[in-house]
Length: 132
Image 1 (cartoon, helix red, strand yellow):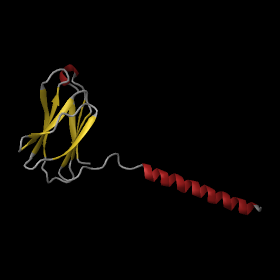
Image 2 (cartoon, rainbow, N blue to C red):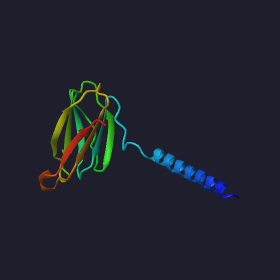
Image 3 (cartoon, rainbow, N blue to C red):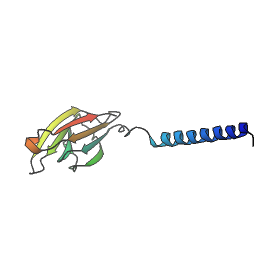
């Protein structure tokens, strides 16, 4: 075999490997999580305590969301605000963490995260909301 033929085959092989690697990376990477759909909300309880959402305007609430888990639900008709609430892990008592304006027509929906600890009176407990 001539050297030129060998070099051509090596170049083709290297190009195929590079293409395969690029295709596999494109298939496995992407956004960490998709945006919530219209009129939807997700609550992820990332702290050491349970949390839940209340929907101002109709009185509905989600169930308690355990530490380390998430819950997705529709924003009920009539809602104009969502209230984020934490539940102490040492008692049945709860505390309002905050609230934000939201309706079932909002698109995209919302992702709410609670985090931190109830130690030291909940000094490190907090929450935030995103729409992506």
